[in-house]
Amino acid sequence: MAVAVVAVGVVFFTEWRTGRRLREEQQRSDDLLAEERDLHAKEISDERALADKRLGEQFVHSDAQLAEERAHLAAQLQKDRIWHRRADLYARTSLAIRRYTEKPPAGADGKPMLAPDVPELANLASEATLLASGPLADLLNEFMYDFPDDARQLEIWDEFQNAARAELEVDRLQEPSTSASRATPGDRQGGNPSAVRSSDP
Image 1 (cartoon, rainbow, N blue to C red):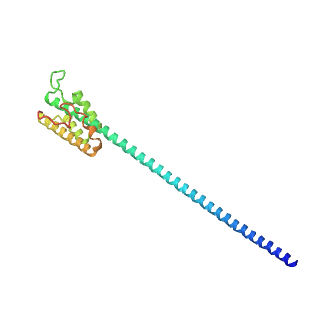
Image 2 (cartoon, helix red, strand yellow):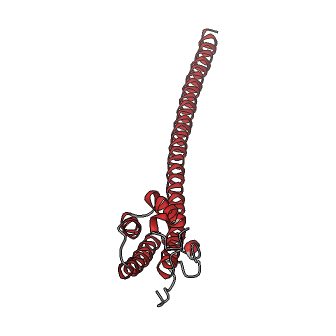
Image 3 (cartoon, rainbow, N blue to C red):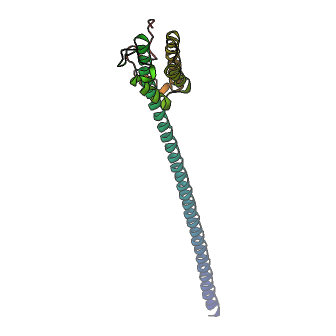
């Protein structure tokens, strides 16, 4: 009888110890799984934070690049406007100078008018003060206010055309992307500084 009781006790103890071991192993497995889940969640969170940071940096870079492109485009458009206005001014000025050298308009007394008294030339001189380059404005001022003789007037007209053509061609070479759009401005008969000049004074 005592042997049977001892045997039953051993069985119960063995089952209890086995159950305890299983519970401990289950607990360790649960703890390990929880740790893995926490680690995985942290990795995902870190990856998302890094992705958000990179995306933000890309947005900042894109915004800066867009702003730079807009500024460059605005500057280019301003250069184009100045180029077109100068081309038009030089063409009108060259034509006005040529007309004056060929036949100065007569005043009320029937005598040829001085260059400063011709409204067209006076208006061009005022416009050139604001828009023309220094060398071309100086040539026009010499023609207007230094009262050169006929030979010097023709020289000034020739120098003005050559200087205008050189200036406009240099600008065109510096901005090749817009050279095509600049082919036509100021192409007025007898007055375009970029056109082939007639041999007649």
